Amino acid sequence: MTTTIDTHLLTKLGTLRQLQIFMSVAQCGSIGRAAEQLHLTQPSVSMQVRKLSEAIGLPLYEVIGRKLNLTAVGHEVLAAGEEIFDAVNRLNHRISDIKGLDSGILKIAVVSTAKYFLYHVLGPFCERYPGVDVEFTVGNRSEIIERMHKNLDDLYIIGNPPDEFELIEYPFLPNPVVVIASNKHPLAEAATLDWSDLAEQRFILRELGSDTRLSIEQHLAKYQLSMPKAMTIKSNEAIKYAVIANMGISILSAYILYDSKDLIQLQVTNFPIMSQWQMVHLRDKRLSVVAERFLRFFLEQGNKLLPCKGLKKIFDLPQTATGNCSWANQDFVDYTLNAFTISRNEAPN
Image (cartoon, rainbow, N blue to C red; front, side, top):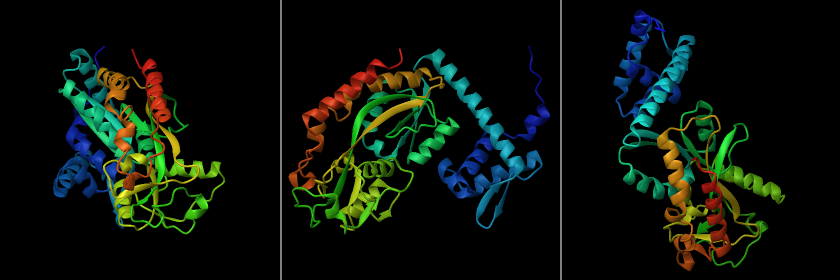
């Protein structure tokens, strides 16, 4: 059956590149952020969006104050663009499937702390399959969930998978969340501490909506402990350097201690919080050959490439930097390896 195409309509919709640029503006909420994301100048982005608007014959957005708001037509064009690029991506996946793994795109989005270890697996995977392009997105938990809603990626790494989706989950690595301080902090020499001993301390925590913040809130509620008043910063790295500067103490993934001799893990009762990293994808997602191969590679090679057997060694920094790293014991390592074994058995064929 031959599909009739309205070429006049195609002309109105401009080029795919113009449509892509407009979609980036709509998703970013500003010309400037879209230009930065696309590695283009602001005038170039403005010109392409203007050309698309002129081709359609109606404005796509309006600026009220400093806020960019889509018009009704703008929303319709955005929705159509998402459908078009979804179809293009499906076509690309089918072509990649036919070609095998000589080429293709892997789209993976992770919560920010996961970036500390994912490179250990992505690097060897890309060496084995040099024709594969990786689109790697880092965000907080709320941002990753928003990407799930839009079905933007193949795979996600998150600590607390949301209940609102039907997901296939592959637990692969424990994520101990610990109380950290500068090694110059007055409490750095304390052998053990109770939560009440921290009542007068200034906390610097991740923002609401982050995976780490959710783990902290759930943990404190479990033990009926009060949430401390805290400064919030939307960056693990920024918190790390604020703590090193002795601006306060924090509760973060223990991976932040890696390669930092200026931080110490405080030995606090009922800590660390033992959460679990999970690789997930939407249950109804049709994974491409590239995504399936990476998932299997991750689950089969992860215990060799990620800090599992070598976990204690990796985090056993000098005594002044980490305390005893009490969570990095053999039981913890065994638990980690068992998690990989369970996940590996559930991997796609």
